[in-house]
Amino acid sequence: MDEAPEAAASRRCTVAPAQAGARLDALVAQLLPELSRSRAAALLEEGAVRLNGCIPRKSTRPVAGDVIEILLPAVRPAAVLPEDIPLRICYEDPDLLVIDKPAGLVVHPAPGHAQGTLVNALLHHVADLSGIGGVLRPGIVHRLDRDTSGLLLVAKHDEAHRALSLALRQRRIRRVYLAAAWGHLRTDAVRVEAPIARSPAQRQRMAVVASGRAAATRFQRLERWRAAELLRAELETGRTHQIRVHLAHIGHPVVGDPLYGPARPPGSGPDRGWAVQLAKRVPRQYLLAAQLHFTHPRTGAALSFESALPDVLAEAAAWARETSLPV
Image 1 (spheres, rainbow, N blue to C red):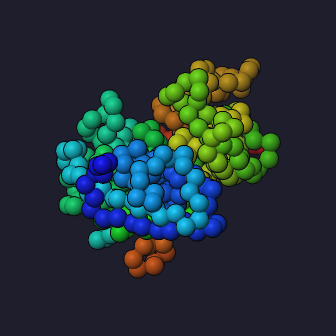
Image 2: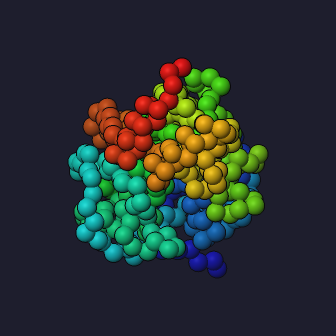
Image 3: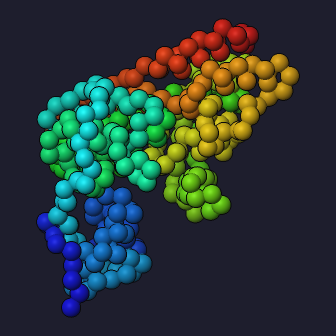
């Protein structure tokens, strides 16, 4: 007899005709909107899903009338230790926090970053932090790259985490970024729709891949500089490195991006010299999570937050503005 992991709760449903024929891992992710598809697949691999009482393969395609039962494992205590790391808190109530994360701070522990992360700081600041995000990602609703600064949403308990994760998947949480990109867009506004997956050639990078997950970003030019631009970027989806990958894909990588940007500042002639000077003034990728708009999961209140450009990026923008000819 197969053994399932210890469960704290379970969910059971009967496959509807409209759901018949879909892959089981996709159905499980649909039934558990607070979890990613990869986490849903992990539950299948762990034996926490039953199809008509048996442990199925994640590629199984149920028919109408089949019964799916999902055993939700008990939340394990976080193996991450609390650390007294200062946090810039924009907002806090019994349900959630909005953090203004500095560049250089890793969000959650990972290989090479076992401590000194935002999660370590949160565990020190918040008692009984939501565990539904996983042992290493308690309370985290969405992430920011290490060298991206700005607004990050954190749930304090599981109910808030489920509601906010669902709102994120349903695109009811607006996230707006500021980015400096090399070169010039052809038009003031552009929408990039290109699927993203891990690069087959370089596993540490993401890339536009035909078989990847759907991804769309809207860009709006705010300022035109000599050999770069200041852009507003709004996510329609939330894929890893999405803004950076999409801008690199259309030939305008983020200024200061060590992974997707050029090895040397682009351009020729006087523009090349200007680009070199801008690059010297930008010691990190020029990307800020500048605005966050969402509805409070319990009160229904509309909440909006803004993060100002850090001094080093604001000073680089001021220099770029002053040294660029009027268009």
